Image 1: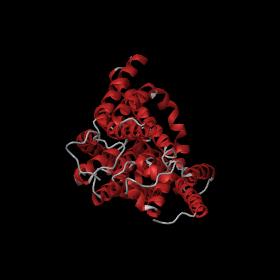
Image 2: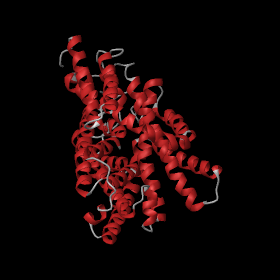
Image 3: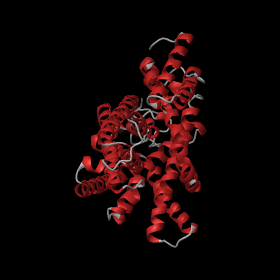
Length: 416
């Protein structure tokens, strides 16, 4: 690996590993990962959990689901920082060079889709508050402006993500804590607030929602932590997904259970926090969606062999054009995606620990398609989406790993 920090042209290291000389410290990575996991969709999930579980069930679902999500993302974070490779280059090793197109496409389209959802998610309340008589044209102007801002920070790479995170993360934390405090004070404490829950959810179903809320973004963790040394990468990833994401569930869940609303924007409005909610909702969506756009662009780069920055513009345009449609249709596909994406991360993990040498060398023996890995993902997706017991993500990962090992045995592959 060449350490050429000052002369390197592609600051995103689209097609190569990040050298040790370009690794960031703890606080930079901490803010990037917190900004990534501080997402309003997690608050919305918290509202749904709180309206379907009592307090003990809510706590169990959030902590158990969060622990699984943290272990999954933390392991991928370790691999990303250890190797310095982005998600797509890891997939070259785990799935083969052309086999990597499948996971790149799946994660890339999902993250671009989330970006589009986020654009409309923010544009609708903005229009309602500031332009109540505005029509479709007003909505699209807002979507375009918000989309261009998100594209700008993703275009400038990890540095852009870091700057936005340093601004937005404290704002999100302050508003969330304030909203939760008001709800608990007026509602008579945690047990009293959650006593309003209508029920209807089981703890395993709640855990599946917790895992599913961020498993797509979590699978792309190596894209960000490859710019960090190993120890900070693992610590910041685990904190972000275990503590940061959990806070978002509590912020949304407590306020949602108190107000009885099921949309985080209207939850905040009910508490008299409409203007702060708009400001922080915008910052919240920005910090996660620029990460999502960054990931989507890297996935497209892997497929089309074009550097990341031009792909950010293409991915951003797609998310803007499709934003309103995605907002009204994309979320219905999330249950399918949430059981489809975890097998990708599971196979990367297993393959890394079995064939570590391939991941640490640039001149590894390339395969075109590692069919047992590809079939493992497909099998995991089928199992995750058809079995109706347990936690879908875990079922999917177990199935994928079984198929992978069967393939390894049949092909006579040895552990590196």
